[in-house]
Length: 224
Image (cartoon, rainbow, N blue to C red; front, side, top):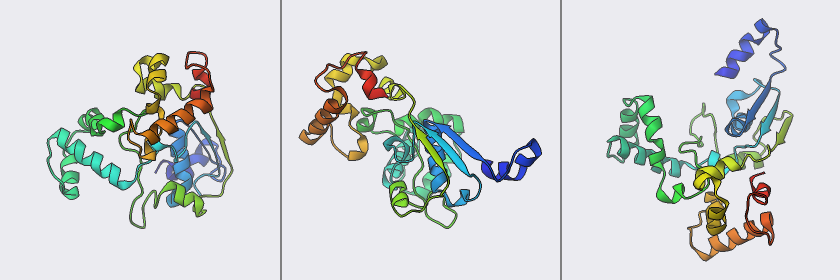
């Protein structure tokens, strides 16, 4: 909607509707990347910059089954016990937006809450001809179903510290050292405490820290 407005009105502000650049950082960068995949955004932008984020980040995309589970949990927290999607949708439309925002964190399972920072309800693929995202982002990219315009991708230093701060107590490096498994991406579907999860955590730790301890100085390697 915003891009359509810009396309129609940018010339009135001295802009060029045929030379629109998108820019986003972190979640904003993921939004920029999503617009690359959105059929409805075709022709509305012509180049883009995405800093420290993409639609492929585990925190920025769920499959529909995970989102459905979270939606039903949210309904329960707000007082609607149902397994009927339409009933839930009708109920949520009656709840003030502020109340939904305040309760959305409760939609996460305990397992989710133990992982790197989560966004309770990121975009998911949709059905229908007017869908914003018509499929899994990775699948769309592999199939070449994205807008072919110039894109600059980069990473801001210490961006990852925000995620660690949300997961550990004030980014206490001692906590990270003791419980490194919690840094394993949740979308690998590995249960904390399993041998596979431990093995991957060990590989991640070795890649970012080598044989050095996790401390204020070495953690910079990870959060960058």
